[in-house]
Every structure is written in structure tokens, then in C-alpha cells.
Image (cartoon, rainbow, N blue to C red; front, side):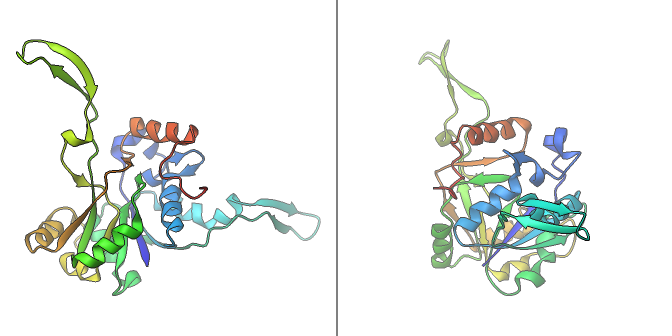
Length: 261
């Protein structure tokens, strides 16, 4: 089953780094967040990826073109007709298709362009800037049993700002606390499963936004399902978000890092 990853946006809210590279190529540890997402899917046995490129997509292509060398020890023997010897190769069992879906194309338009690669089969879809510990097998089972055309992973991200605890009289602040997940609503956390019928809801218009008219129509027709995930989820919209993910990684406490367990 193929995994489609949206990796073409400008990443304007993390422009400190995205002016040099596409946001999915911003690193956590020593690897791009895109690699972390792919590594996570791979643990569940999903290893056929289609990446929708756009802004600075050539950097993503160059990364995978040289991936074999990046992950290996190499000897360049210039005395033997420029021979290159690969040592200790660490390669992933991945098939990666990189598709240039346009510089300014919106999410729906990007997905429409990869129809010929997924053909008439169900596929995963997620954003190239978020990690989670969602159970992908349970998500897929839920999707299959629900009869929905699209199933998204619903998460409760909580708030970015602290909450004031007010006394019963409403006259004084009596404390501060972090806004709990339960204080907010459910949102689309990505990690979606889609049946091929979804392409009927998309257009080739580069301004087609998946999360607008296509999903709204699916919802009106009762074709949009959800899978509640109460566990870990974190996007990387800002440097603050990246700092959170980097700290989790450095502390050996990254919930999405399940491949060494």
C-alpha cells in the first residue's frame, strides 16, 4: 500500500530555515523530518512512498539521489581508475517516487497529480511536517470497516498558551496551568487513509485545496470518517515546534521513534 506525503509547501511560519530548504527537509537530530515520517511508516510495513514536491523540490530529489552514499562508508580510490567502494551500507527497503506537483499548487491539486501513480488502490496520505505514534494498522482497519472514502486521524493538540485559573468569584487569578488537550476540539492531524474515489472530489486546478471543498463535500455526503488518536502528535510549524521535537529526540524520548525498540 502506497504512502503519499505532501512536501511542497513554502513553510513560511518557519522561514528561518525554510528559505534555504523545503520544510520537510528541516532536521530533527541529523535527519530531515521527512525521513522520520517515512521511517515510522516503514516499521508498519508500508515502504512504497510518493512524495509531492513543490518549493525547492530539487533538494528533496538530491537527498534521495545521494541517500545511498549518505548512509554508507565510502572509499574513493583514485589510483584504480577512480573506483568507488561502498562499505557498511545501510539502505532502507524503500521505493520512493518524487513528483514535481508545482511551486504554488495547493494540497488538492498536488494529490490529483499523483493519481496515475497510486492508480485505483487505497493509499495513505499525510503531511510532510508532523510526527505521531498513531497505530497505522488500527487506523487502516478502522478505515476498511467504516466504509468511508477518507478517514483522517483526529487529534487534540491542546493550546500553545497557558490557562489562567480564576477563583469562583471571578475576581482573582489563583494559578496557572497548561491548556489540556481536553480543553480544545479535535483537529485533522493528517495520517489519512483514502480510497481512490477521492480523486472524483479533486480537480486539476492548482488552487484546489483538499481541506476545503473536497473534504466539505465528503463530509456532507457522509463519506468522511475519523479515527481518534489520544496519543502523541506534533507538527513542526515554527522553530518552537522544532525545538520541542529536537529536545525529545536528544533526550531519547521521541514517541515516534519505534524502529529501535
